[in-house]
Length: 369
Ligand SMILES: CSCCC(=O)/C(O)=C/O
Ligand SMILES: [Fe+2]
Ligand code: NI
Image (cartoon, rainbow, N blue to C red; front, side):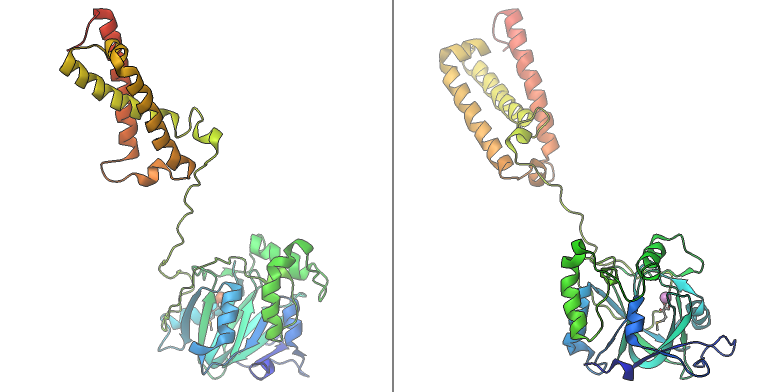
């Protein structure tokens, strides 16, 4: 669907202090095209507000631009808590560190934006109009004379509504905005070669929506892949409070190296663990044979124990190394009482025990028990 001009119009504002809800056209009127808006980062679409749930174009925009979060806001005294305060703060000139994305589902309102020359441009949005204000742009919002708007708010990931009232020029988001849209010559936003790939899917959606090509900096800054959260909060209008966290992305699991040198490194996962396991088996077997036959450890080895010792060593080493080379960490198998730490400590005690046993038997010249 296009014909954006039917639902989104923009013009230079006059300087009068009259009621903010009046149009504030200059005399004569000076309109600004939607292409001109795009040149300083303000994007626009016309969508089917009567079929929001099945709107493929909306779905595509959300997917392409990573708008995983969605809620609804109605601006009127009955629906918006702290209506008067909110109305005032919306109209304070401010910026956000992320995009402000608003899709008008009913009623209408004015989003005023500062252009590259710091002039106020009033963007009037009606039902079906969706606009994106880039991170770092100074702007404000007011209801118009109809006194009502219902809008969908979209966001990349967990929303941050914090407004930074002007001046907040030191913020990185502002500096980035100025660098991209103000310091660059208007209308000649060269697309840097290395970022072309990131831009490709976005541009196809832009073209489909009949929006002019724009710089890669028009892409949302906080795209968080793989998280499609849909939520409705019809009566929420809070600017400062982020919505309760949900579906927080899990921190990536630490990578387990399967490199031969890493696995077998002195401080790697294998040596101490294998030695510990061998010591546990060795200690228990040595004590068992001593109790049964009365042989000390050296005699046990001499009397046919050596092949058993070598065999057990090889078997246990293979059994311990195979999962490590497959990238399965011991910690990931650790559970409840059977923790990997407990095994390490048992192994350490067994190693000490074995050494103490052999040493004691060497000194006393006979078996311990
Ligand atoms: C119609 S959305 C209310 C205005 C708003 O959320 C905002 O941030 C204005 O700048
Ligand atoms: Fe805002
Ligand atoms: Ni805003």
